[in-house]
Image 1 (cartoon, rainbow, N blue to C red):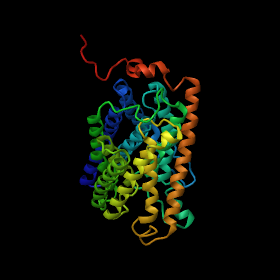
Image 2: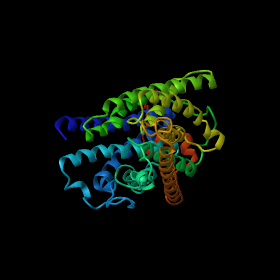
Image 3: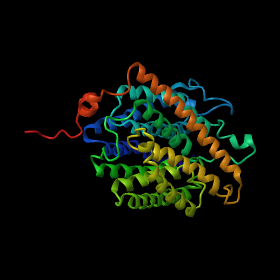
Image 4: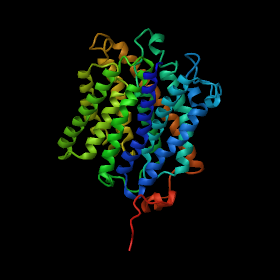
Length: 401
């Protein structure tokens, strides 16, 4: 890499790292005031723990020697003591993806999770799920080679529709089932305590997502960075509109939280597709994702699982939409853009393969933690507010007379 490419790599790494505090603000504003510290700490805990694990062995696991390998050897360069400059830059960039993927899961268990139990789950899930899945998708594993194996087009997941969003969304669903419903679980019972915080978090996510989607172009001579950037903008803007229209028609009002959620849904959907759609098709994808995710977040009330902050409805559903959409509209290989059903077939296999694997491992890990040291706080602590119980702090310690 030349100095310009290295500079962009470091800039993109900083942008993506900033997204995890963005998640903390976005999630923190959505919960009640007496849970905001707990909610934000799960993101910062992920940043700390997964950052260390990635340096020690996660990066080593994210690339495989052969197609049939589960993951790379975690001890091949333990602690990255032998890596060269460019490898270290790439490893740092990859760490930010691992960190935010784990942080995303936490939104499903807001208001009721023990911090220590969450940290144990985060470390185990990253080791058993994220690090190997990253190897499958980008590091030479079975998903990267699926098209060649089947004689079909290769799987397209440029920035993480499967590895990040479907992966995190499936794990979020598993944990929501393990921890069960909050003491009060009904539509309208839990209002965001700080809407400006939600908008700030979503804005930081949109800002950082240009590093998330376009960052890897440092390895490609920045050849496709323009297309990726315009698609990241267009799809996200369109998804915001799509969500707001559905919200207005469904509930009678277009809300600020809806705008923020729509933007995130668009960012999720364009993630796998950012380098392989024309800008027009990216806008269509955004409208579709915003509208469908606005409806999908209601599933939890119909199906009875308490996904507190709609990780399933936005990240799992949005990730599936973006991944499968490529089967129809990927430039040159989509069903309606010069290809056939082959692209859709490999996209579906990759998407649902990651979904099932992540869900099952997360379910086993979550259930084991719950039945041993406990994952959920006591009901009375949830009602009182877990910030003071778990962390001994309040998000808003106002002077009292």
